[in-house]
Image 1 (cartoon, rainbow, N blue to C red):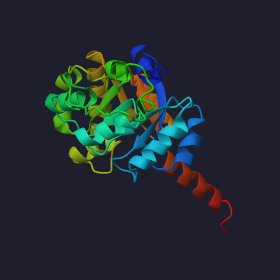
Image 2 (image 1 turned 60 degrees about the vertical axis):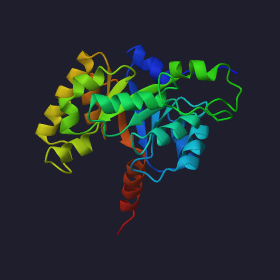
Image 3 (image 1 turned 90 degrees about the vertical axis):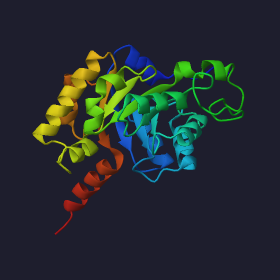
Image 4 (image 1 turned 135 degrees about the vertical axis):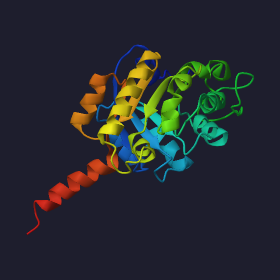
Length: 254
């Protein structure tokens, strides 16, 4: 059995913009439905959603064969969490709250087997298709993609050093936490925050790395695509459901 190709990683390397959706519903049926919508990627969130490992595995299974490449965000930049998610077969990880090049290098090490890194070696995992993928341990790194999330003023100050870290494929800007750290809690569209993100995207591109962001709504998403972001989430599944349900219910309220 061959090692699965990471279509998301390949698209970033080819300079193709990727449109995605954020998923916090922690449900395999929802992921299966969303995987058939035509998005390029779907983010399975473990940081701010009630996703535990069995739920993540079920969602990865539900997305297998769909057009949407799964991206998993572990709850933290942690060797154990990353090891377990990788063993489930996730090939692209988004690591939250990376503030320094040293932290980025730690994340890289957790993605790689020794001697290049610190990922634990296990046989019979879903990632290896229970031992059926030929030369998995030697070739896995070719199809793994590491995205790090910068969402603080300190992260912005160290942006060039983070981007220069070997093994980092892309940098995602987190508007919500960044706005809070800048003194504008709950105001990610504050002009000062938007200016900082514009500058960050420019610097990420100058460093030769892919830039990403979550932008709820068509107009903001198109703005960031035009600004040069390579991967953009254009909505959140639970919010889309709530808005559609609220709108439908409102039509029948007396």
